[in-house]
Image 1: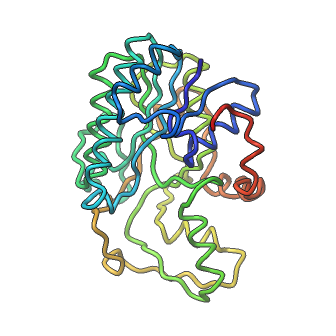
Image 2: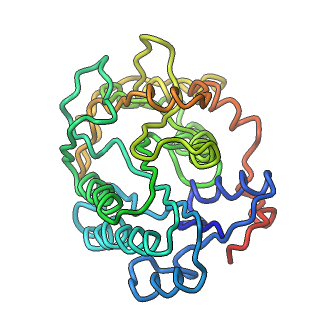
Length: 297
């Protein structure tokens, strides 16, 4: 049995589509089917169903709310829930694929640099702290695992930067977008394909980084991303520094991560521009959720 936690989320839904296309059976659980913050429920589910593979997509991702009103839930889901799932998976002999984030690194990388897989972690937000602790919980459980750090996630099945920009462009002839935060966008389809690829090709377990690729020497900011999203519209996109958009949680100044280890597996990582184009060509399938064949409720 294959289990997907967070099966109705942005990444979980993308993964469901991918597995459906390949004719792979799975059980996709969201909080109604499996509350990962309830240890008794998690243990009972794993003891009864004994999944062989767990794609752990469930996460608390409200970065700003995690600093105050969502702090408790952030801890419960990203730390406790991940620990419960990891320990249960270890007990039944399952392999776990856990999704982490660039936020574990903090803000110490100059522009032009890349975070290595083994770089020291120093999170500077509550979200980053709990995802760091989630990584540690996975390792401490002894479960067979892949930890994949990603960043700037966009896709067809949930609120994200692409849809936000397009929606704003409908009513705003001019937009200002942050141009002093650097990184690389990640299409959920590329991430889902990599998750499956690591398992199917029996790659070495451990830590990986996965975003879409960028041309050599290309520096990518949110401003660059927005320009690409809106390049076929009449909306003017102007750069501003992040001080114009104060937020509760500190954002990484440069979250660009090295893709060297992921590429060494033989997985083809397309550019973020191509990923954006392919997502748009597929159309917004969010309007047809009933076409997903999986066993999620």
